[in-house]
Length: 514
Image 1 (cartoon, rainbow, N blue to C red):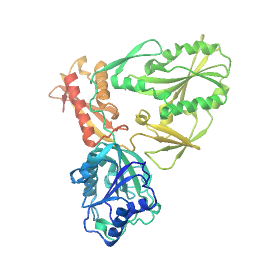
Image 2 (image 1 turned 90 degrees about the vertical axis):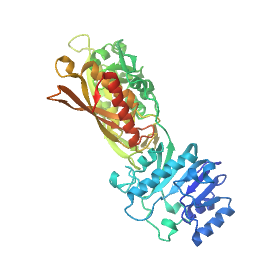
Image 3 (image 1 turned 180 degrees about the vertical axis):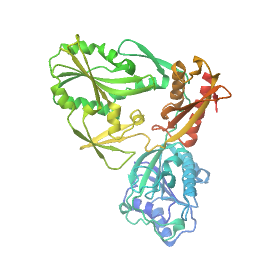
Image 4 (image 1 turned 45 degrees about the horizontal axis):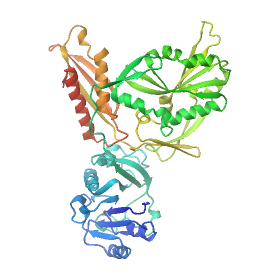
């Protein structure tokens, strides 16, 4: 546990103050302003001894501080801290999961009131309590304290997870509730660091679209939010997972072939072959010598589902034996997704398994043809344990240490929520107008969900349609899954977004939400 010089650190829920005493004794708090607090005003002999030591070292000690009422305390409420630390919070007793969740929630909500802008809240929990995938002690999520969800009620996101080792703090003794001498097991304990990160409060115009120029010269209108994702150009960002995979594929090819990296291509999935066939690179490629490959970072637009898929497009002419050899080469990537595990997972792959191929030629004999390989970066990422919505997450980072590739999101281990949205058509059954969820209107529904979700919608699909035999109306149900990698999203927040989507469907399409 390290703090930058000048930090102002508040420790709450200290039992016998041995943890802060250990930090100060090791010299880990030089140049740092420490405030150590405890709920109990009556202290044990060991606690009194540690308090005397802390006071001598310049640590401010305050007794009778309720960690869930920091913003109301006569002393604490006037201060602002860069870090607030709560080690092993517990209400006491067994089988009190609901009360411990409440404790965490109220602590987080109070802590942000006295937290400096950009500050961090640190909570240490025993193994299995938190309810996050990297936890070495596996429990069902509904049998955990749901620490990420409790933090989200205070607009806090999980920024890092570290293993907690009591041996790193000589003299530290973990005492139970009300400073009882009885200790508790700390095997598998984890330290969680949170930071305030609110979601954008203002959604986009529900029906807003932007024009995108495609590589075949045509244009297409995309939902404004999808257009903003395209503008991010994650394939050119080496700090993103998609950008890293693009660079990795280029490096793999460059070991045996001459590779020229070209401009970004954008095209529709429905006209993929025609669009790529019109690409200027096809003509250029025919005039090149063998073992030369042209590589384009690309995005494919799926109009049916209104999704963007990052790709690597390869153009190659001549004998394809060398290209096939490189693409079929079995490679192992050791990938650690920080939201999933503390240890990397060996992912064996061959680029060929994620590649579709076509060829362009001037005649039917395919003599002098140009081979075009379409490599799915999204499929490569999924194979490496990174889901599609993670690929587009803001604030992600990739680092390579030795042979281990570490992928970190801005917000770790976000909670997923699934809600259904049902509505009646505005038109009575009969005739062609009955098809509300097809054609232009279907695209309008997709646009509204995409724009109003503004990055919190992981996926959605039409679950069912139903015709009422008496009313003569059709009902449609969409299943929408929410998750945010860039800001705090609680169940309440997800329900609010869900409600906004329903309201905009009623406003823009005249439907009736059930």
